[in-house]
Image (cartoon, rainbow, N blue to C red):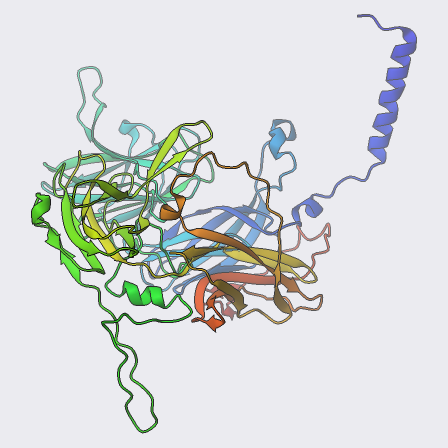
Amino acid sequence: MALSSKTAGFLSRGWVVAALLALLQPFPCPAEADSSGPPEILSLFPLGGRPGEEFEGTLRGRGLEGANELWFDSGGVRATVLGLRNEKGPKPEETPQSDAGAKPVQLLSLRFQVDPAAQPGSRSLRAITPRGLSHPLTFHVHAEPGHRESLATHDLASEAESLPEWPLAVHGTLGQPAEVDYYAFTVAEGERLRFEVRSLELSDLAITLFEPAGSWFSPDRARRLAFSDEPVSYPELSTEPVLRHRFGKAGRFLVRVSGFMGEGGPDHPYLLRITRDAEGKNGEASGSVSIGSSRDLWQERSWTRELRADRMDALRARTASLPRPPSRPEPPDVGQDGTGKPPLPETIPVIELDEAPDEASKAMVVTLPSLLVGSIEHPGDIDRVRFEAKVGDRIALEIETPRATVPVFNPYLKMVDAEGAEVLTNVHSILNANTEIEKQIRPKVIHSFPRAGEFTLEIRDITAAFGGPSMAYRVLIRPQVPHMGQIHVAEGHLNLVAGTATPLSLVTDQEEHFEGSIALSLAGLPPGVTAVAGTRAEPDAPPAVNEGRKERYVSRSRKATLVLVAAADAPATPVPVPVKVMAQPVEEGRMGRMTPVKDLLLMVVAPVVPTAQSASNPVEKTVVESDNRRVSPD
């Protein structure tokens, strides 16, 4: 469509005015954009080292201006910051629109020193800058000799990089999307090896074993022997692949590291450990333990929490009073001062069900509480026990899967009465928003008996298609104890700017009809920081269609907020301060035991005034030990 000269002139003048206004605006300073917000670390290479080893590495992240310290959550590792530089990124016209305002990526050069006495295992590493503390990355101390990937490309079996003798820890990177790395090694006949990969959160890596077999079409063809990508994904369980293989003959073999969905890029480093497979270790190898990790101290509704014979005492310790069962009278007073003996611990009887009969009439009779220990030995195996209950008795069933867990092993508990009618299961049925019935098995269920009688508890796998020693279970059947459940704290660290306030959100679980309150507090706050109670607005949520018998399977929860206030003159903390979240049950005016809930890392930082020179200042060389002591440079 043709435009009139008047319209064209108006538009041209409009563009000229817009261009002049744009030129008059002050140019943004890159340093100012980079100096806002806490530091962010993206990746680390290499991901660890061997005790007694000294090596250089690189931390990749954003907002690292002024970083001169690294903080570890346990001892044995020291780091020296050597320098900071910007990474060459894509051209402006090649930058995705969603990343247009992102801070530039930076590379922090480091020298690591691992103490000769350092215990193998994983540690959390964080960067400290004038704007606070970063989120953690995992640093692995491995017992095997280290080897860094040396070939630029070895994505074909014929170009596999030859490895020294194992055991070995290989540090490599999948630097591009869809990249794969082949490594060659030799073994003796009958050797059993264990391969495991450690990576970062962005990566979902897989391990594949090959034998260079060749074929009529290609002499370089490799035949696949084994594959692992760790299909199980469950909270608190590692999703890193582990592969075990027994080699029937001696020779040269290949191992390939790849992204399951073609992951790759500068933030996809990995650590490949090749060790001799020691049978009978239940899948754990040296160096796989987490050292100094900060986890919630109490786990209740989890398939992997440990059920022990002292569970009843542990539950009563989370109440405001410690009632003793009738079978355990208080000990008499002793001594002239009238003090009494400490209460004797209650030990729950442990009942082995490995040889449980299949007939319900021959099931073992147990009393409450009892800890049932056994396994689903073969497909279709069902273990049973019988017990008596009176009208109004309230029980709790807790299930632990110490080896294989959901979704590989799905324990199904079913309780029937003397006539065989179903009374209770651990299957929670919900009618979702699509009017479809959704079912999920739960690791804990509670029940109140409306009538007395003899009841039978059946334990099986819900599929009835699998069995074996790995499908082990521990089922605790016990009276209910109303108590303070898990206290959920999402944050692991807080950066508090002097003169500001930051909310800390908590969710408290009220277990087994606990009707009391829970007092929350923070212990170990640095000078100038206080914690006060607060409120928060919750977003409107649509009502559930039908949540089923929710009271059986899900704890009641309450939400709370603590507001951390830093005074304007609060001194900055050069290193993170460990702060404990504490909880205390309150019932009818009685105060229960003060219980630690979670460890937080808190830093008070001074308000940062952006300057154009902050990004160009040289980085001070500082050696920081992992026990947070600052040491002068050599």
